[in-house]
Image (spheres, rainbow, N blue to C red):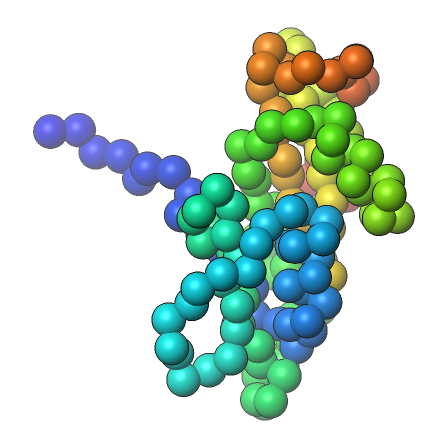
Length: 145
C-alpha cells in the first residue's frame, strides 16, 4: 500500500480582524462564508466549490497577540481557473497583485496578500485557460517579496 499526504485540506488564520478577513476572502477571492461547527470561540469558515478551505479564528477578545505577518508560512496556494476574470476582479477592487508565468509556460500564477499578510498563490493551468494572453515568464523567486 502506498503512502500519500494527499492535497491541501484547509489553512487556518488567527486574526484580530475577522470582518475584513472574511470580506477579503468573499469579495476578492470569491469564496463563500458557510457552515461552521459550534465551537466555543468565534470565527468563520470560507468555502470554495463546497469545501471549507480557509478556517478563521477571531482572537480579538483574547490576550493572544496578533502575529504581524504570516509567521513562517510564506504562502498558501490554490489550484484555480479563470485567470483573466480574477485579474479583472483584483483590479476592480483596487488590490495589488503580481502575475507571472512559471518558466516553461505550463503554469500561470497570481499572488495577492490577505489583510493579515498571508500571501495567496492562485495557480492556473495555461492549457485550460481561455485568456487573451498569458503573463510574462518570470524566473525570480516570489519568496524575495
